[in-house]
Length: 338
Image: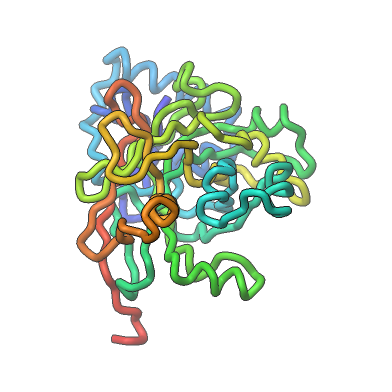
């Protein structure tokens, strides 16, 4: 089953069921007006939503054309957005952890940070920055949405709480990362709004692509139409989503509708940009630049600039399973400076 949230003039939008081929949709309003409402009582709501999805697939309901341009983030504002460090290869590349004591610690327990969840970006919303010189970077990730998770949850409880899967762009302003971390409170200014694909899907609907609490699909990343990477999200993911949820719930309950990110998808390889059509590449620019520095003594790939367009999608048989995130970088002027 695939779900989306369409614009309706309200902050949380309108929940719709989307056909498997992403061509049609039907309102789920008589069951749950919003995705959060469905997650709040998932055990009761899910069978009714599945039944509606079955009717849509069978043609018993005509539905209406689905337009991803009208989609908001599936949860436009969420109770919680937690990003994890599932891929140690990403940490090694961007933080130089290989062989360090930190690397030993982080291979035993994942890092987490709590991001802003009050305003999550639509899949076609621009990447906004106040300055073109902030080293604007994309970070393509897989994310899951959970039902209620009790504090101290074990692996089985954490895995059973995964209700929905999607992909996201956890935008980073690299020039501000060091300041945020040195201040001792973690990421804040360096992490603007995260964008999400137009669709979320139940793990069951993903078939063999969802196993071991990981999504085994390549996540394709393009900048201005050029292929940057297509690493497989199920490869080299050291911590599964069950691991990340267990860690997130170590000292607190997680509310239904909490979103857990798996971290920037990253595979081990020796490639540098540009990559071949069948290459692996990168899910963020910082990794590509790190490899270039090691190979050539300097970084050659620029960070994103105003006017650049980013496209991200998890691919299966040439189809973007959750629909594409397509964002253009734009400068904005803070209200107080106008």
